[in-house]
Amino acid sequence: MAEILFYHLTERTLEETLPGLVEKSLERGWKVVVQGGVEERLEALDAHLWTWRDDSFLPHGRRRDGTEAMQPVFLTTEDDNPNGANVRFMVDGAEPPDLSDYLRGIYLFDGHNAGAVEHARTRWKAEKEAGHDVTYWQQSPQGRWEKKA
Image 1 (cartoon, helix red, strand yellow):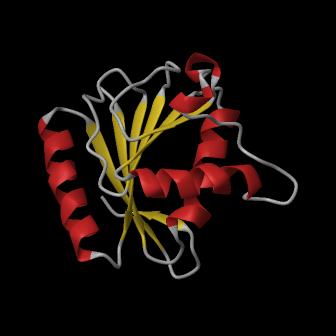
Image 2 (cartoon, one colour):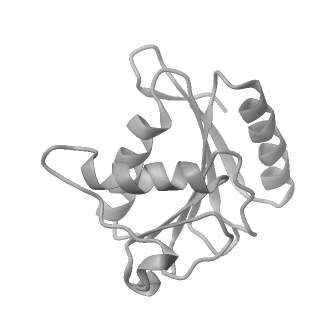
C-alpha cells in the first residue's frame, strides 16, 4: 500500500508549495507525476516549473513533448504514468488511479476553497478505505508543515 499525504494549503499557494515538494522527491531519486484537474492549471504549472527559482528549474514534460518515459516529472490531467513515477501529486481536484503501485500519493488542496476541502475529505475516506497509510498536514502561520492526523 502507498503512503498518502494530504497537504492543506492555508498560508502559501500551490505555486509556492508544489515545486519544493517535487524537488524533494527528485532528491530522493523518485520520479514524479503531477496530475491536475484542469488543463489550464497544468499549462500555468508547466511554465512555472521552468522559472520557479532564479537559480534553478524543475525538469519536466508533457505528452506533447514526446519524451514521456524520460521525464523525471510528468504533468498530466489523465491517470497515466508513462515515466514510471514513484510519487503522484494530485492538484485541483484530480481523481487519481489506484495508488497502490506508488510509494506516495500526495494531495495538495486549497484550504480557502470549500469545494477543495470537501473533495479532500472524500479522497481521505476513499484512500483510508483502500487500506493506504494516510496522514494529514496543515501549514502553520509561519508556513511550516504540522502533522495533524
